[in-house]
Image 1 (tube, rainbow, N blue to C red):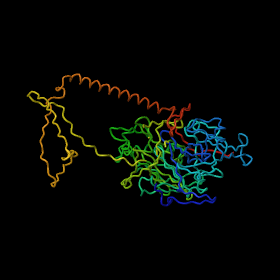
Image 2 (image 1 turned 90 degrees about the horizontal axis):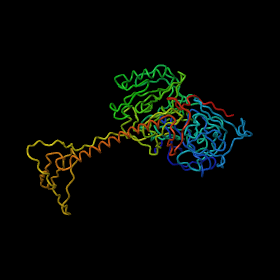
Image 3 (image 1 turned 180 degrees about the vertical axis):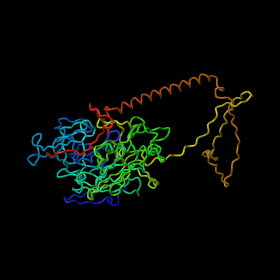
Image 4 (image 1 turned 90 degrees about the vertical axis):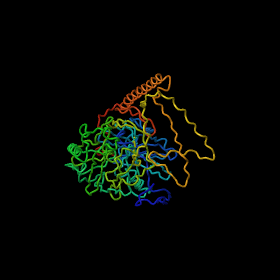
Length: 596
């Protein structure tokens, strides 16, 4: 990988205060799985417990909260079925349960320190505090362990109970003993810089701690847009203006919260109505001609008659531009701000929120961008990137960043397509957390020339038909004479090298039948009828398969789909909870949690 020169110097020796010596690049990277259009969240795997026999846990990546927690086997009273087995206190020999006698805390289940956390859409966790060895990254080593504090869940409610992911990883700023994983890695000397980067793709992506990987940028010269974080507790940035194409919206929000745990972007109802007004105006203008595809408010229909590919469809829409208070520009492209509804309809991934002064930058707005959180300088950098493979990606709106070859991250995870879990409204997306997530831009190859079709019309002649000419036998190739040279490609003039003797041309005339094939056989009628029958059967089977496929597709993408293939495992995500469309997995308000 090519690492940022301002951060990395390749393989180097690191000596820590505890005397350990490590030989590895000071960047810990883990694959991200999930998406914001089907599963409605992104997650990352970690390993907990003994190095030789750890428990894997898949955790939702959430910059809007600061607590990491997942179910515990021995004490879970109400926990759903998730991707992996519950973490076991008894099977790990490296854990430590926080006791009430050693800490000022409320107690639960005897002498264990209690915690509880509740999110804006109603989901909650409760349990007790545990410390154990945690390993982060795709290629972790024994020396990479960190004694990490997390919540051992005993009760899950609502979306936390029904979701496929095992738990949640809060990446918000820590306080006291509650410390996010990137900060703990930095303080233990396992990474060089107090930074972390989220590169969320259409499916999957990359999560890096200690810096960022510049090979994901769409172009090596693309500038990273740095802006100040304005809060000491959450990831807020100032917003100066919002425009769609060249048209600004009125009453733009003044602050934005970066929250990867929220599915969509959120604006107030007033601002959402203003977005619809400006989209209608811009799409009806001369530069864009997208108004004719409008199906309803903030929704548009894809037509294969007008656009050969979805990428061309997306490129017919304007780009959203959010300008921050320090003049950084955050661009939101159509391939990311649309989500699919049904087979051909696409709607804006924006939901209404209460305040005119604040908006939320959710997972859909973070897609195909690197978000680099520099905790030392209290800044966030944003740059258009290819975080996962997506042939329909609207790459950029400035041609000077499209002329060089776009690099492809080789180890970006490819997540199987899965219907929505009940953690969010189902969105029908034909066959891409997850988790995404980055090929080079496909180029249109010129069509391969083909031989002109031979007319099947019989020649008009009054003479009786002559029998077909027998095939002319080809001479046996000899070792002394070269074989016949292949015909040159169509459109290419055969080379005539004067230095080589030219063989005399032999004009061979092959007599074509003067009547169609039917006149050359005795059972032509039977053959023709047989061919028609085969053709009819093929068409009938194709129609039946099409109808069956549509029915299966709609059933698979309906609410509360039964089982999905997820992170190479089959998971039952059935739940009695039914969420109406647009009721996405939205931790859109700051979670209320207590260390009791």
